[in-house]
Image 1: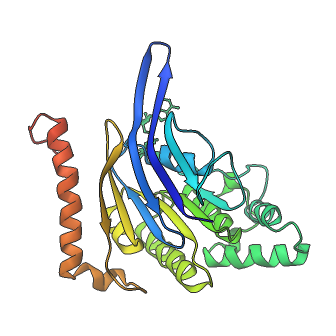
Image 2: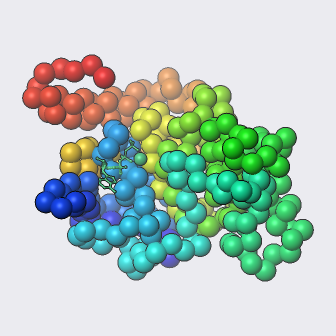
Length: 268
Ligand SMILES: Nc1ncnc2c1ncn2[C@@H]1O[C@H](COP(=O)(O)OP(=O)(O)OP(=O)(O)O)[C@@H](O)[C@H]1O
Ligand SMILES: [Mg+2]
């Protein structure tokens, strides 16, 4: 029941006489147990798509389906890592994570809840910061707590919005491999919708990449990533197929930039 589907989805934001089309006729399917990235430039509607699947918004047109049923609000089958940190500021990192575990598993004992929380705090490398409040943590650390919280809930569906965007490259690489290890290693695979604007991250992590374009936000292409797992970022980098997937995505982005600037080249 954890297949995700967008069917001809449009989102139009209106304010008085003005309206803005954030998404236009977006369709895709994310099969159960697959890892799919949504990759595109800033403003192309990636977070808007994620919020529809999280149940925090609804489409102006079309259908957003989970397991064939329209999404109607938030639910515990999905855990979300938001683009902007979303921890409760009045609770320590540990308490934030324990609260989510209690919600996901109301029957678990206090002892089990606290040992699961400790396990995930360790996994994201924050054992010495477990009892700090969010305001006492750096942005990257807060994001690591959000990631630990989402993973500890062990939901069938994981929705992640640029979860590693605020991290330095070492932490980013460590958490990418942690995410893959957890996703590949544990019994039934979660269905993952992963938002990023980083091409290499999308290729390293995904089974499939949905490439988006902006103004209006729409699907530009879908690319299947053929590499077997477990993957190793370093050895992939020198692979010819890797290079051709990368080039294909870069040229999709480039075509959009030249189109938006009336054919004049623009450096960004
Ligand atoms: N509540 C809103 N009202 C009006 N416009 C909005 C609203 N939310 C988003 N938008 C617009 O919709 C477009 C898509 O926004 P969205 O946040 O989904 O982009 P994004 O791809 O996630 O960008 P980024 O990579 O910068 O996070 C943007 O142009 C944004 O200004
Ligand atoms: Mg966004």
